Length: 246
Image 1 (cartoon, one colour):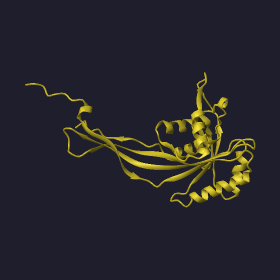
Image 2 (cartoon, rainbow, N blue to C red):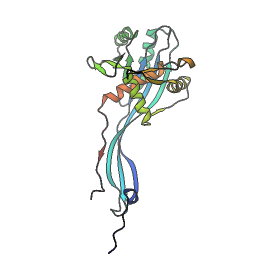
Image 3 (cartoon, helix red, strand yellow):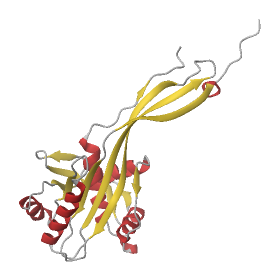
Image 4 (spheres, rainbow, N blue to C red):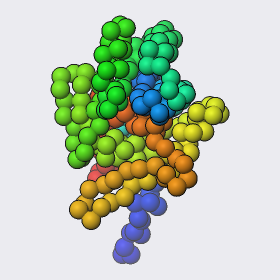
């Protein structure tokens, strides 16, 4: 009796695709990087969407319909607005502008969240924002690789963690930049010029390419918003069920 032909797992697969089975309401996060009077202040609005997906496969010798073999929740982000304030712009004017942006976004289904870099001049401006009825999440950028929570609205976050979060979202192809405004072009330029350098000690330093005049105000506004969005919920889990074990 001749032996049955051997098939690789790949040869047994007739179809293999991810299918969206559910979506959740979209949510907006506004990130602000506050500059000194000689620097730009930047604002970035990101739209966060969650969708549940199932991986469905159909095997050559299995049922006629595809079967679920894995599921996941995928978070994606779209940059919907980028604004770079002029150098020397009054902080009260910035506060009013931010309030206006939040007011427009508050008409949506999910209330937006404001995340502000509280480093340097940021702390007094945080107080100004709160005095004007806003509820910013304050992020003080620190060294190291971790974050520390001081309540629910105040965090110390390592710059390496902010940028590694941004790197991970970009690597997973979960971020898109919409719009063709000059500020959006600046964000693309900053992302292209931003780089990581690993020191001999093992720590990572991040900086814009100063030789080409590239700064990091817009990309850091994006980074604080993404960090808050990614840390708001536990990381998505992949659930798998092999159909090859039958």
